Figure 1 (tube, rainbow, N blue to C red):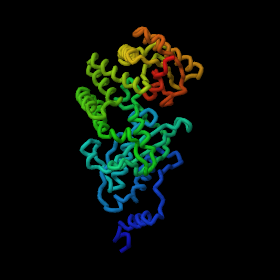
Figure 2 (cartoon, helix red, strand yellow; figure 1 turned 60 degrees about the vertical axis):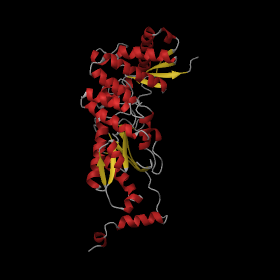
Figure 3 (cartoon, helix red, strand yellow; figure 1 turned 30 degrees about the vertical axis):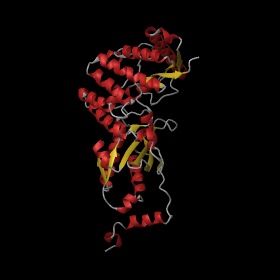
Figure 4 (cartoon, rainbow, N blue to C red; figure 1 turned 135 degrees about the vertical axis):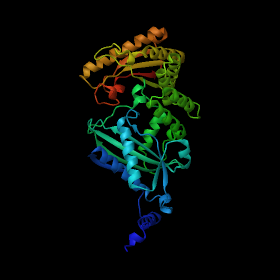
Length: 395
């Protein structure tokens, strides 16, 4: 009988001895410089992540299953969940389940957080410099007890027809749903092993489980149940997050509770003003300053404008109203179009509050600050056709 057949744990022990004697270097983040087919890239990133765990004391000490919870993976540019990020999550977790029996993938809830050892997070980000057809995949594994990232791995994937459409919650969202917590999640996914996960994100993981559950319920079109779950998340110690306020707005709007929805959108705007930025998806007819003709899309715009005006006036802030366009068309045309759209929004705000006439300034940046950058002019790049409100000093 071969030695390894009798002692299958021997390679792990030997690798452990290398660590103990100082002959092994600290595991580094794995990055494959090639642009791989998506499924292959996910496998490379997942395998690289797992490989780094083999020298961890917890794995050397005992070959028992290690509980892992997965915070839903995100698009690294927009902070959204998309069909592609769901595919990334499904492919990576399936790989861990089938190829690495030491891991036990648990539901992302508070009960599992209490018994799991690790938190898995992941992002995929379109690399603009490399062209529209490449995504950088980042995966990170964080120790739930210490808050340290124990493994981080990357790979580059070709966009071979990936569906980057936002999931229902993000498709319906009136705003760019990205705040310091979401930014912390994205940073954690790129954090080197041995470093701490972003504290703004990691300290709120318990609330993240409630938000994830509420969002899944919303995506399942159970709006009354989703509203209750978002309200439960809001009442938690770290529940005052943009995703929560936005979820309360969306659920109320779907339920036809217009007054409650407007009040909830006011909280969204208040949060955005307090954090110095608010990007709203005001959609216009192509090449014009006329709001999108379908009232199913533009119906709530008057509510949004009213609340933006009220909250900005109450806070006595000054704002740049910044228009954005998608990449379709020439740069000069889009510069002018984005400015005209910003000017129109400024004018509408002044109707709601005369005080804002001297407190707002219209700017247009065309497509220079695209978030998605695909130029598809559909739901996939709706964030690129936003109007942003940035708080500036009053002169």
